[in-house]
Image 1 (spheres, rainbow, N blue to C red):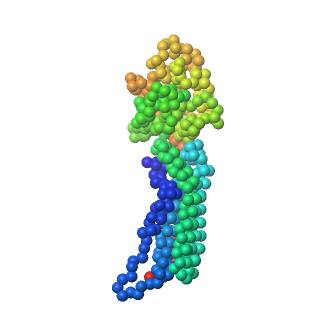
Image 2: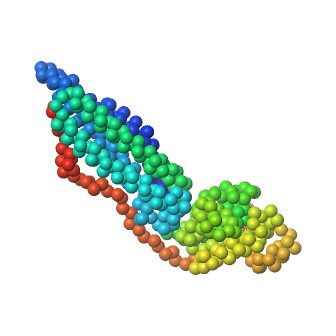
Image 3: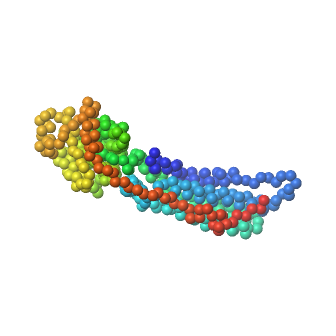
Length: 368
């Protein structure tokens, strides 16, 4: 399972408030038993509120710390994941949301210190009740102000959890080309990948990863969304997934032409696309094939050769599975050793980890 799918449930600000305050209501004092003298109303409420606050602030801080620490540290991610997050959601936006939640923890500590001091200095039951009401209001407003960053993290989690479980250190063959060129069919026939296949273009909207074992080594076959012949800055998020996969994951690239009359891109535009891929990824071996040989006549295929060059013609159909597997095995034999990318993940640790309440500036007082 990928690190993004392991991100636990993130509550909305409303749900977080429900969790905190519903538990708070359950914290009560046991009634006086036996011959023990009944405490005064002031002593009762002051002790009760100290007990409730002793739960309230640490529990809320722990909830927020868990949310922040369960998100991968952006700067420690592989460049592929970091740029993909930027495309899908925005790195700066995500870091800002995490920072706002983390900083709220420090704001809660400030409220905690002030409230503890006020409650400790109170002299009547009514004054203690007023301080509790003020505390609930301030904490409630603080949680409400987290609505935007929490919603951002929920959206980011949904987007990131769609990413397949890539092995970033595994040798990878990536398939590229225009929409509807047969990339998904190729991957499905020669690997464990099960991409959606249809007769209309733009079926593949996500990166889909299949695996193939050769002797004792596993290889990844990556089906990428179709690319259009247009400048990089004009490409949408779906196309940018393909670009980043080619940039960071591919050790070899298989480019497929769609030579049919109903192809979404003309052969000229497909040539432009291939030339751009060759230019941008010049260090990666690129293998070019003309797909859909089974639906072309000899005359039509010859015309295609004249326009784009005499590349090997194939048909990504079940009857040609053995031919496609031979192609993959031949490419696998030529893949160079993978350059490993290492990083060290660190979690955002609370600044006062391991310190007692007294050391953090808050000393709880109990009267029972």
